[in-house]
Image (cartoon, rainbow, N blue to C red; front, side, top):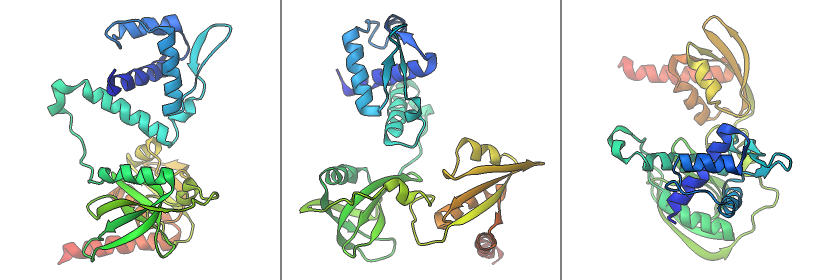
Length: 299
């Protein structure tokens, strides 16, 4: 069976349990045949058990069975709600499956362009698995290019771009974009030791995006106007986001974060939908950015 077809079956099983909760194998098989997942063929118990094992390995989703009712269900639904690689993999495959079934209307489905860089994912992931150093060619915008040997720590996707967090020859942790600035990536025979106490989640926990410069922590309070509160509620900017209070046509939110340029630029993207209330220095930074921008239009 083609990988795309088998992945679609995994996605269908997960989505069916998410929709209906608990089902016996007979109930699941009936829905399977009605949906013509396998061209109307039944779902044997042996195939279902293989799918359960594969779903656990691939997505971390546990499909348990109640002994008394013989009903199956997802016992750890939270795994599909957090910001894990399994959640993103599930989402990506689900979307790809729907798009593959929509070839007849492909001209009516528009995708956002994502910069290049996917060709570097395979050698990076292979090096991360085996703790091998990478030789990398890189050129910042309007700067001369250079070649470095780096220890690949973390792959992170942010704002439609892939980034590599790596320790370079100067023993510094730096983020490198896998777009047109990356022009070469090759493995070396040299290995490195990944620090046992290093946590990628903890490393980025205080930041928005990938810019991790040494900016002091701050308790940032913003006022969101009109419809902006709805956007922040449905897609929080940071795990520390808290809703404080609401008034006429506004809601206040707080963030415990290091307010780097990435975070400020995100706030600016809401235009007049967000106002920074505190702290005073962050409010002043936002004001300075807006003032400098206005000067471009006053000339």
